[in-house]
Amino acid sequence: MRIYHSIAEFQSTGRPVASVGVFDGVHRGHREILRRMVESAKETNCESLVITFDPHPRIVLGNASEVRLLQSTDEKIEQFRAAGVDIVLVIPFDTQFAGIPPEVFIRTILGEKLKVSKIITGYDHFFGNGRQGDFAMMQEIGIELGFDVEQVKAVSHCDTIVSSSAVREVLSEGNIALANCMLGYPYALKGRVVRGNQIGKLIGFPTANIQLADKNKLIPALGVYASLIKWNGNIYKGMSNIGLRPTIEANRLTVEVNIFDFDEEIYTDSITLYFLERIRDEKKFGGLEQLKEQLFRDQQEVGRILSSHRIAREMTLKA
Image 1: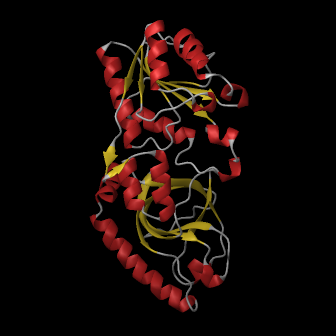
Image 2: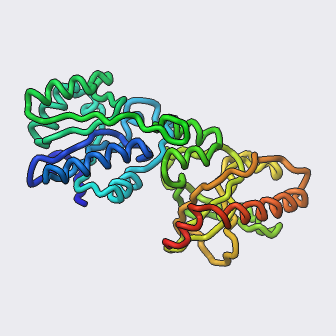
Image 3: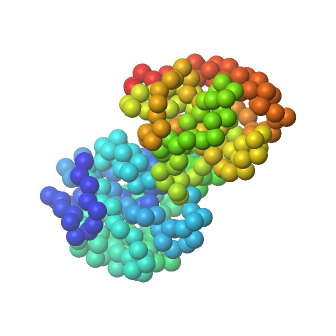
């Protein structure tokens, strides 16, 4: 897969079949668009091309500190690779680019510069300045310029129409099982292990405190989760906690994980934390002894969940 980070450096040997969008999360709906794009490209002996943007338009056009995203650009690119995409064009998004009228984007960028032969678009795709661009506009200009436009229907999974906003909503509610169902893979956070206050180690449940790599990444609802941890190419089981640690009155949001059967020095190392199932809310206990008793029960419950969880088995075998 070839990756370009500007329109100026883009190169293609023919007229690619393309899809345009932010693709935050690359969920099941996005992957149906990618599947159809790759399939259509093979049918016409063309390359498949994903056109996306970095940073996310909402970071540039809104209040960046309030934006919460499902994936970084690097994570999206790995999903594109897994989908069999030939080319990814990451367009730098700024206020100047945001001001381009949608019809100009279609004519000058898609038509003249990228020379697309076909566009595959989602059922609810709007784009361009003021979100004025839509399927009808793209189809009309496509007829004029000589490229086809195909619209993919909405994807429903787990009795829900899949969308990035729907995934964000259920993650914020702590419904990690539904979020993973819509995504088609376990939601993950990546970061560097930093030193905490060592309370977990004191009571027999040492935790790795994670400093997130992406400040705009959406953090799921507070609570305790059955999790998998990727470190140094290996997959481990564990229980993670997202919370304010009210028992010790920390009052600062932390993401930490107790890795089962693990005794390695991993401070400053990068790890990935996968969330599989939420087992309870965060609670305030009467003291460390009560907290320790609850963590023991949590550990037993998480072990039971992970021993029979399909994703846990599959990821452990692949590692």
